Amino acid sequence: MILSRLFEEMFKRGVTVVATSNREPDELYKNGINRELFTPFIGVLKDHCDVFELASARDYRLERLTEAPVWYVDEGKAALDRAFSRLTLGAQAQHCELTVQGRKLRVEREAAGVARFSFDELCARPLGAQDYLMIAATFHTVLLDDVPSLSPEYRNEAARFVALIDALYEAKVKLVASAAAEPEQLYPAGDGSFEFQRTVSRLHEMRSNEYMAEEHVIPRLKAEGEA
Picture 1: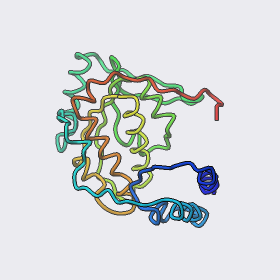
Picture 2: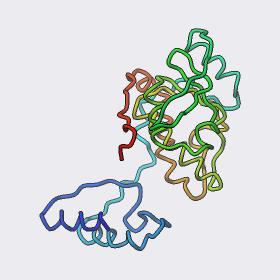
Picture 3: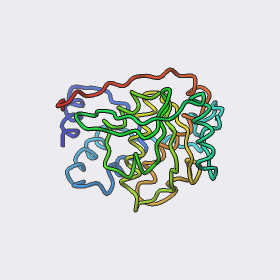
């Protein structure tokens, strides 16, 4: 409803709107909760905008990327053990606690700016964006063990994984992971798989030499009590 009123007012004022989307207007927010409240916005778009399909089988974001060996399939714990030792120069892993809006978030293994978690520690527990932002602010590198294949039955875990990757990506945190499959095969089908494709692209980019050369960016964290 807010989007509909906002765009109606912009069009009344003669504002030219150019936008991109992964879906055509009729497919926006498909199967979403209370979608009937969203459909007036679709009508506004169709009344005032020309829709063009930019179809291509090529993902241009991946074309100049040289992938580094930071995503391990079927190698598991041993590969990440070696990576942790290499990245920390053999430092002894310790545990620490991060304070997130008055709550304690325990990190079981960290050393020299590198933290190591299992997928279940970060994505099977009720964590949210602020937890992931705190991790991204504290560590320049994250090792993630045992990323499983995902499906609609694990929609909550998949949503947390997406939020985690978003936080790490925006902060230019380096990611080393062991997984059940390559990124494009992690969530191959079913409800939610389409939306997961942006995360697939980000995971590929995070393996590139260009991304690896980026400096760690400390994200802004909300203060306790801040809305």
